Image (spheres, rainbow, N blue to C red):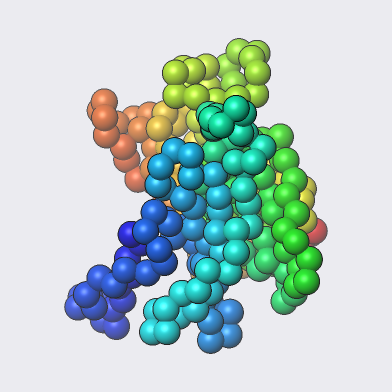
Length: 241
């Protein structure tokens, strides 16, 4: 289950309340007027772990299934079995580029995909060619900024990933700018950071400056990680897309 709680003072929290349906892992959300828009990925049986689902509602009225926005199962099915090592979707990050558009950065176990939706039209998805695990997207005067873990291959091989070949990759913490279905790397915050990622990003209180937090294991004892905060300053001469 995905659960929800809330607090008014940061000390006392409401009891955990289950939302969505079983085996739907709610990952990102935002408030659109008086309604929440939320996106989840499947965590049930292996043959079901192929879809990304959109929901709408509120914690008070409940959440309604708004449809599957990405499904890789039909593409991967072969003789009644499923193979997901290269494309299983997870951890979708939802944002709203315009009043009429929803967009989503989607992690797969190959390349990150970018999706977009306009009212009355189906979702469209693009391959980025970058092995990114996105975790946060915010709107800024410099455009939409995305923080992500980037996997970089140490030796030439097919552009696929499974956990038996992780030694073929190094992981960087990176900041990107999104412009429609195009990506531009802004900077690398931490190179060869071991197990790392799940960044958050916010304004730093000064124009053009942003704070990015992330975890990384490159300096920690085996099995542990440290949490870092980086301050990024983007030059005023850099115009938004």
